[in-house]
Length: 167
Ligand SMILES: [Mg+2]
Image (tube, rainbow, N blue to C red; front, side):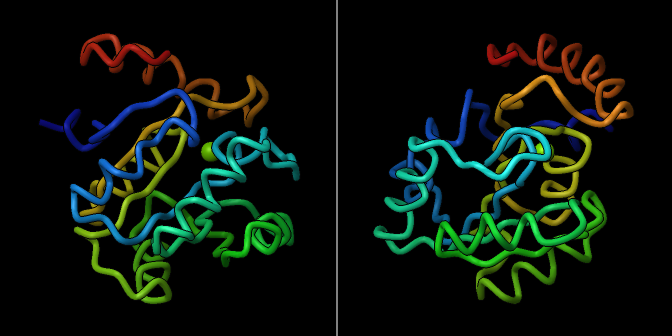
């Protein structure tokens, strides 16, 4: 069923709501984080205190983390540096190449790596295709690219159908 390719393994309101204990139970050791509308508001630079604290706690627990973003330019790297992690930009999610590169740098296998993102058609579809544990978060801000806004309509339909009570 094509829809299952878009279905996340976990859905939570924000990054800070992800239970790191549950990830450990799932055998997860690596976490790939989307940038826009996941870590920062769309086109933003600032990570909230709650998100920064969550990243810090994840690092303390020994998780390997990286930003995997389709954005172009310095922003992903600047945000990553502040969080003490690394970034891959221009990732072309949902295509597999960015996921493969990120896993190679993290040193984790697909089944022991989670990807966190606000879009079913890029973060979740790509993560599922690459064999990762997919976590869907609500977008931090209503601002985004016009074509993304169009896809939100489809995301709402699917999340209602799946009974994901997050949108
Ligand atoms: Mg995003």
